[in-house]
Image 1: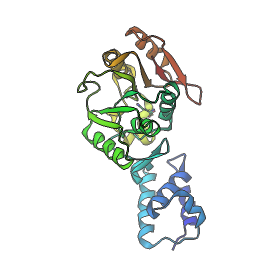
Image 2 (image 1 turned 180 degrees about the vertical axis):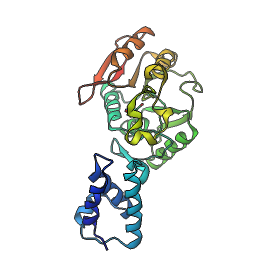
Image 3 (image 1 turned 60 degrees about the vertical axis):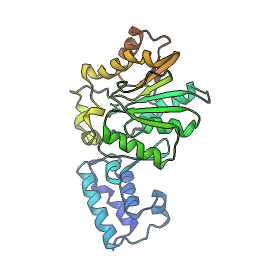
Image 4 (image 1 turned 90 degrees about the horizontal axis):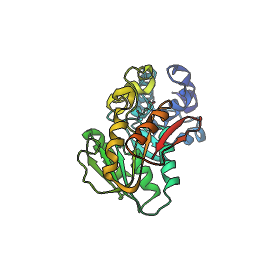
Length: 273
Ligand code: GLN
C-alpha cells in the first residue's frame, strides 16, 4: 500500500514536464476525487489497489506527454472549472489577460458581446460569470468544441451566453455588437513550438493560421466592422511578436484608437481597436 505522500514523491518520475509536482498532485486529486489541498491534510491516506492502479496509468500517460488537462478532463480558467477534451485548445492563463482587459475597458452593466472561436467557451463564460447582464454570443466552427462549450455553460449555469455554430461570422445574424473578442489561431505552421509539450495534443485548427499566423486575425478584422456598433471595439489575443503587424491590420481596415496591452512578462499580447 502506498500513501498519498509517497505518491506525490513519484513526481520525480515525470521528467517530461516542468510542473511535475503540480501535475502529480492534480492527477492524484483526480483519482481520489479530492481537491489538491486535501492531499496535504491527509498525506498518510493509503490508496486502495484500484486507486493506485489508476494513478499509475495516469502517471505513465503524463510521462508520455499527454496534457494533465486531458487526463483529468478539466482545466481551471478565471477560477471556473472547465471541461476540456482534445477537440479544443486547453485554456491558457495568458488568455485571462483578455478577460481582464475586457472587464477593465467596459465597466458598463449591459453590453452585447461576441466571442469568436470560443473553443471550450473559456472567454465567453468568464465574462458571463463576471457580468450577468451582458448578452454574450459565442461562435464556434467545430461541432465537438461547440458541444463542449455548451456543456460547460450548462455546468456553470450561466444563462447569458448563447453558443452558435459558425465559421467566424458566416452563420451570424448582422446584429451590432459593442465588443467582439477572440483568441484565434495565430501560430505559423513552421513554428517549432508546435512540436513541444501540450500543444502536440491540441487541434491544429485552434493553433495554426496561414500567412505567418495572421490570416484569421486579418479575416476577423476585415469583417468585424459589419458586426460592430459605430463605436464598437474589437479585441484579439496574438503572439508576443505580432503586435506591430496586428495594429497595422486593424488600422488598414479602418479601426481607430488602436492599442496593445502587455502581459506580465512585458510582451504586447492583446490588441484592441
Ligand atoms: N498561445 C498559445 C500557444 O502558444 C496559442 C493560442 C492560439 O493560437 N490562439 O500555444
